[in-house]
Amino acid sequence: MSSLLFGAGLVVLNLVTSARSQKTEPLSGSGDQPLFRGADRYDFAIMIPPGGTECFWQFAHQTGYFYFSYEVQRTVGMSHDRHVAATAHNPQGFLIDTSQDVRGQINFSTQETGFYQLCLNNQHNHFGSVQVYLNFGVFYEGPETDHKQKERKQLNDTLDAIEDSTQKVQNNIFHMWRYYNFARMRKMADFFLTHSNYNYVNWWSTAQSLVIIISGILQLYFLKRLFNVPTTTDTKKPRC
Image 1 (tube, helix red, strand yellow):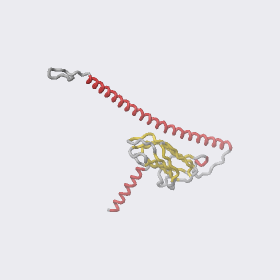
Image 2 (tube, helix red, strand yellow):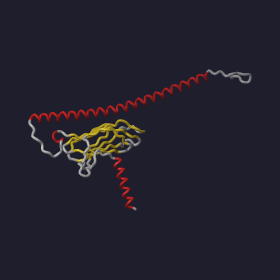
Image 3 (cartoon, helix red, strand yellow):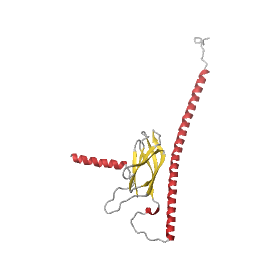
Image 4 (spheres, one colour):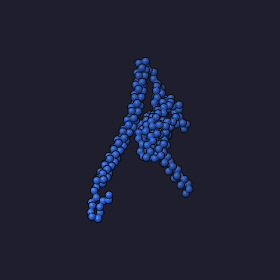
């Protein structure tokens, strides 16, 4: 009986752990199928609960260049601190770099092949959630892009020049795509900020208008009381 309860506890613990941490790719393959490495780049938004941590894993080969950028787009809840803590770890679990700001970047060269861990911690907000836009991945320059073991054919000078030009164009397009994602992050953050300011101005203007109306009514009421003339009778006369 105790062994069954222990086994059930392990299953529940594994389910909770897998629900709290999103991995971009599996750590192992099954059967004769090759290991699925996932895509080389990702960009999406995620909500982090108060005081919570979200982690992701990205596979990278050696001699690559890893980039990780983030920006807090909005806060939800009582707290409005937009700072988050970002960390990057190598496949061995050692810390590579950290960043604690509203927006930031972590860039480094991959020294070994494996799954790199990226974590975001909402430690500054204990009463509010934050929406964070992420953009991370890895790219390779030169012939290291193809990691399959195969013999390369001898190319003449013309084809070599075409290959070099194509590689440069691909790299330029990739960097343009990164700058485009930076613009998207800033655009969404500005949109949420503008929307929040719009609601703030509307509510504050409504409150001020109500205060002005109520104060005008009270002033009119007290001014009217100043000019009230009491009625006099034989038994009730005003005193000198």
